Image 1 (cartoon, rainbow, N blue to C red):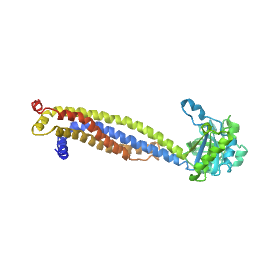
Image 2: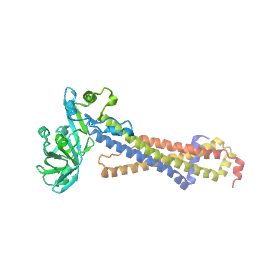
Image 3: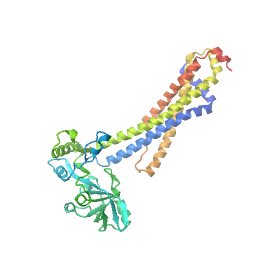
Image 4: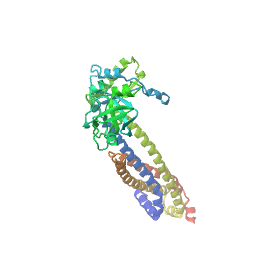
Length: 412
């Protein structure tokens, strides 16, 4: 018996018990649909995060104090006061880092901002005018503070859009006084809506001169971060090397393993994001794949029942000349067809649900969330489904193929 004949006979057998066949493939449909949904949503999340990371700018080099932790027991090393005014000025020196066109410090100030009895919990940053270029910010109202404000440690502040709205509503904020840690600050500008930049959510931010923050609001004189904008993307690797050399010279470090600072570029951030999202997606896919195994066991059970019910049919076919190979092929075909059809339905069903879920996420989580059809996941799921049918169909098919034709014909 050729494969075409075996396929036809298998389809006839499956059509005879449509309800049983439909229930049998349900587990496969659910398993494949789950894989498609997880792969599509995972890819969409990765694309969203990567687009936000890339929006930071490919020319940004970010430096933080503290060396890379070598394990959970080494976690305290991520905190350090290695970046201070001396390091900032050394990195600003074009002789040290020729490829840097802007060097800006960031100091995080914990606390609230108040105005006429209203209090809002916002992110307060001490920085410099170069922050405008580094984060590609634009002003909605007023102006950013100046270098003279930094030098004189002026009590001036620039607000993000949401911070301004929470404190002032539709009223004009320019020239008004707000209070940060019992110190009055005059509002000189309001940023245009920006969203996230360098992992900072600028719409709910308040920015003051870093000298003011370090002198009056913080007990430490260390920066949390120093960001460098390179002249071009091609110069980023050289800027990284120049920054490392400059800081090592300042700190008398001869062994790179003893660096008390960490440098990250966009390429590093992209690699980290891909690794994290890839691991999480793989973990979820592994969980979803368990349902395929459950579906395979269901197919094996149904096929064993089918073999028992069709014992007389098997005996009759053997009596008219069917070989063990013919019987084995027929029942294997039935198992593979069930799982392949289930895989195809699962792909269609899962794709539809993933598309619907993407629309919901784009409206509730992030507008930039896009649908991405996981072609490799769909193909892999379909192949795995067929493989599950083959693996879990072998035992029932073997049971059918080895039946004694005389005993089979006598079976009631």
